[in-house]
Image (cartoon, rainbow, N blue to C red):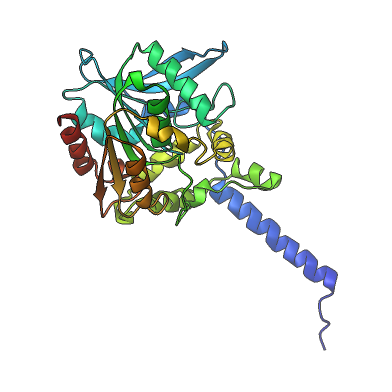
Length: 324
């Protein structure tokens, strides 16, 4: 008759399995930070450039940006990306718009190749101050300002605070309101425990990034391996994961909603009908609050319509910019 394993033996066996599983996870998903220099060749080819931006407090912020199209354009188009994205999200639009217009795109502090904020401040107010400095260094006094998601929220707040600088406003599935989200991508969830926070800075399963990108597309089949590579590798830029956690912790949805009626610029509101992160009902809230606004819905698209179908969505922008 065989003896039953003791509790201690069973515990040691479970611990052995746990150690083995941890080792396998470490080999499969360990993703250390990558220095900026290792990412530039692939993600910052010409016309990408880098600016050492002097901030009001004396600090210097490195900024990855692109300035394309005719410099003779006196009212350039400036486009702001969303959370965990980069200036690359606008490439389809820029290709079309820059044939006749000057177009400026940039990686906001905390994201892309710009990397962490030199101030450690990811509040909307800090981004507003950053934009004033960035536009000042490029000597852009008046512009068409557009943004998607977080960038859309920053864009409408900037338009409300600095109406003399914004000739027209384009909001693409814009953030900044306190709205119910039907689906938050896994990559946007901030670990609350210190140990989980540490693990999030060491491990980054590529399947997690893949799933998060698919969740913000209306048609997940459009998500390619190259697209996931971009989101994955730019998230690994040194300091970006910690910056993302800080941004998500510091954001205050709805805090500046009272500014909306102050927007004077003609406003185009574009929305993906399949956006589950910021549902289309938010488009109507913006439309009701912004006096000179119009809404266009794209039924089959998701949260990043400018990226998912640049041809259709940029045509709406062309029409808007050429309308009375």
